[in-house]
Image (cartoon, rainbow, N blue to C red; front, side):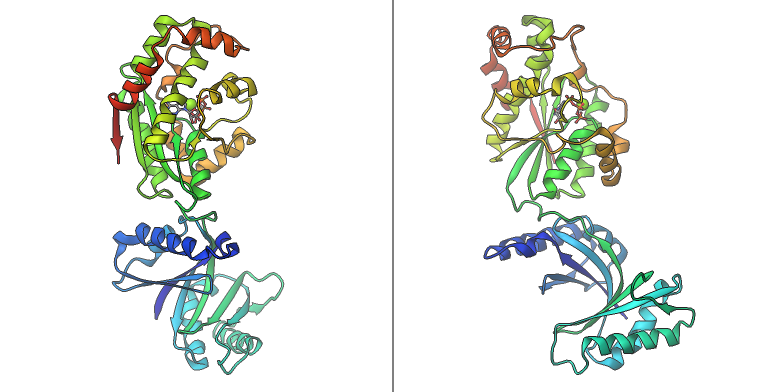
Length: 387
Ligand code: ATP
Ligand code: MG
């Protein structure tokens, strides 16, 4: 009894002439995410990707990984047999036993893309349904609200039977919409922001600002762990760690305290913008949500945006904290995010921040800094890449 996985393509089925570019990327990403599990035969037909193991892989693990590949709407654990009614009726009770023993009602759906197959879809359903009722006398058919839907697909190369269908990761293939740099702090929000844009097909490079000795090694490790957790969705994502101590000390020593936060955030954006260009990325991504804290009001965001020409994507801007937390639990970053290590944003925070600083105030304060030198050293010297 051969088990295989059928992954159903999502939004890319709406693509027109350039569809094949997205298909290729989807398959490349899938191959990469399961490469260490063995050899596979992977093919695409009728918006379904067929994944067969050639080396006895752990198919439960292949299933779990496939569910995290952006671009699939649904993933099914399926079984395959020869394209004859006899084989289908022989296989169905055997391969579905585990699933059907635990439920009370079912229905059968058939998809017949091979129009030469002698039976039409309703006949296939009737025969398979009858066979299952014989094998599992406790079952009843319920066409409206079945506990389980059994699907029989008769395709060119064989017949497939499945009853386990779970939602895929959705979105667009990772990397199919270009690259962007994610400003990754240790908090709850920025990993979620990265996940959301990766889901829309952006390939991510993480940037983390780190200020030793004010922030410790464990704070950095926490961000490295977050980046690893994101790699489950963003294969090969790299993390650039920028040492920000010199810039933060310069701000502390030369600028008026009430403007520290805004000046620091503008400094981060300048450095991130340089790294964006260096990594040939097209945007910056941050985890801000409107009004969540004082540095995320419209005025404050305007001040941080106006310092570069970067396109800044803020996928969480209209979301509540609770919604963000839910996603972070689902994608597996929450437990790491809530570890209590200091972020460089909390170093030198002013006691009385100016609530409505103007651009003129900020520019006056920034004139006291050697901005070019600080940015240049952050980008070229005080810098490491973690793979
Ligand atoms: P998060 O939960 O992502 O830390 P936050 O609610 O703490 O966000 P801020 O501290 O205002 O918000 O930071 C806003 C955004 O700026 C973050 O979501 C992140 O994208 C970026 N950011 C903040 N601190 C850092 C850092 N040390 N390194 C890289 N990016 C940062
Ligand atoms: Mg934070």
